[in-house]
Length: 149
Image (tube, rainbow, N blue to C red; front, side, top):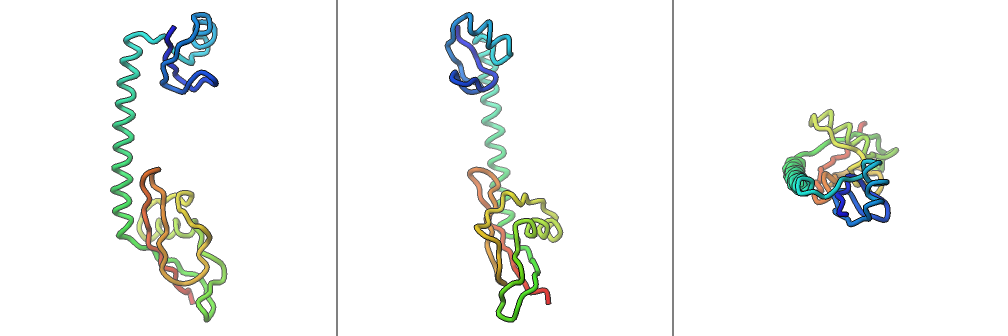
């Protein structure tokens, strides 16, 4: 019997896969636990429409991420920290402080977890901080680190 899976089933298949299983396994396990349904023409058509919709939504999210990346590329954020005479900072600038500065100065909510800082910024200057907006899109935010005092 062919079955369309609604969820991932270990050692059988992933969500939205069409798999061949025995009638007993389908009736006694898959259907009872609502993990799938019989692959009728209606179910196959629903699956096809769902996949088309998912692709459309994914393409739309990609376009939105590209537009946001283009917008972020033109912006800059200033962060102030205390520094010594040699320009070396007392402490560091982390992604949390950059996200807070972006919210205050630009009115933009940027997720600190998506900022890719190899290590915290520990000196004054201008830095390009990569922000992963989408698996295929990374934006660069210009961060200017200045001395407070």
